[in-house]
Image 1 (cartoon, rainbow, N blue to C red):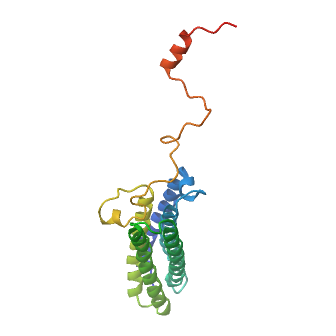
Image 2 (image 1 turned 180 degrees about the vertical axis):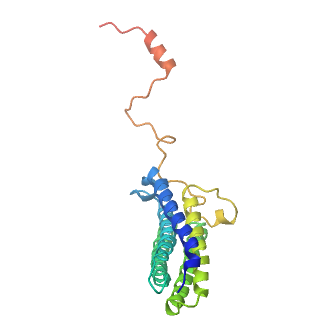
Image 3 (image 1 turned 90 degrees about the horizontal axis):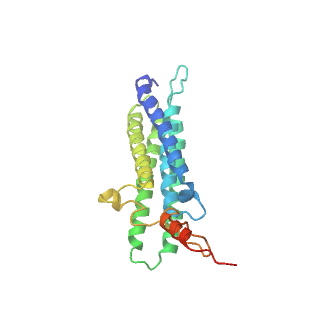
Length: 226
């Protein structure tokens, strides 16, 4: 199969994937405890995992498509089948954990149905894309001369990057309005852990930091005689 005509496309996709994965790592590493700490919310972990799964999926498929194979050309069908299958497994695992978490934590809550709908949207959209990857990858691997599945895979890679970027944007605190805001698993939620620079309560027995006015007043006070 001659994939030389697709080389520039896969090269651009691989470069974009590597850059976006690096940016995702930087974004998470700024406050890793908010996403992967012991007290991190399951919604943030699910969104971060979904973003990473999508970006890795598109990156490895695009990179594998650039491997030269003598007398045959690169056939991305096999690697797409593998990565699509892994995407399905990871997405199902995310959905089971997130749904179970919502049912345990918000049982009896009037907004439980909305939380489940948002968690379901996170799972269903990704499952559709990864399933289409698997279907077209099997067709391409079975008949490398048929380029129609390859064109479809190229379009799906754009969709996978769209999923990864959307989830990363949600993780960074995207504006929560419109349809995308309604489907955002993090919409309407507040961090369970207090921000240390905004809501840190005064510890009992701790000495408050004196202000300049307090310092001047203290200096004018007479010292007690011993």
